Amino acid sequence: MRQKYYEKSREYHPDRFGLLPQEEQIHALEMSTTINKAYRTLSSKRERIKYVLEINGIDFVEGSEKVPQEFLIEVMDINEMIMEFKMDPENDLKDDILKQLKRVDDELNEGIQSLFEEFNFQNKDEKQLLLIKDYYLKTKYIDRIVSNLDN
Image 1: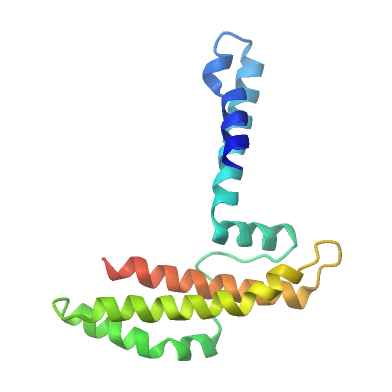
Image 2: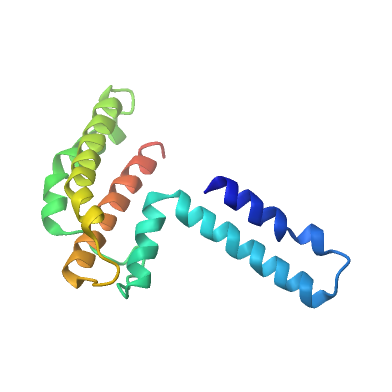
C-alpha cells in the first residue's frame, strides 16, 4: 500500500504541475489531497472502520455519540484509578491504568475480529454494522482516556 501511495503521490504532486494551465494545477492539488486522505484512512485501523461505517450509511457525529452503558460500567474501575492518579500523579498508577486499558482494548479486538472477517460488503447486515459502530465508539473512548492521561 505504501509503495502505491508514494507512486500516486509523485504522479500528482502539485510541484510537477507548476508550469501547466491553472485547471491542471487545481486538478493535481485535488488529487494530491484525495491521495493523502485515502492513505491516512487506510493506514489507521480506526479510520478504516469509521470509513466503512460511513460508506454503509451508519452516520454518527464524533463526540456526540454515547458509549454503551455496559461498557462504561466495565471501565468504571479504570476511571476511578485515573481520578486517583490525577489527584496524585506521583503515585505508580499510570502503568497499571495503561495495562488495564490495553487489556480492555485487546478484549474488544478479540471480540470483534470474527465479525470483521465475516463481514459481507455485498449483503450488508445493519446489526453487524451497529456492532462495529459500538466497537468503534468503545475504542475511541479508550484512545481518549490514554491521550488524557498525559494532560
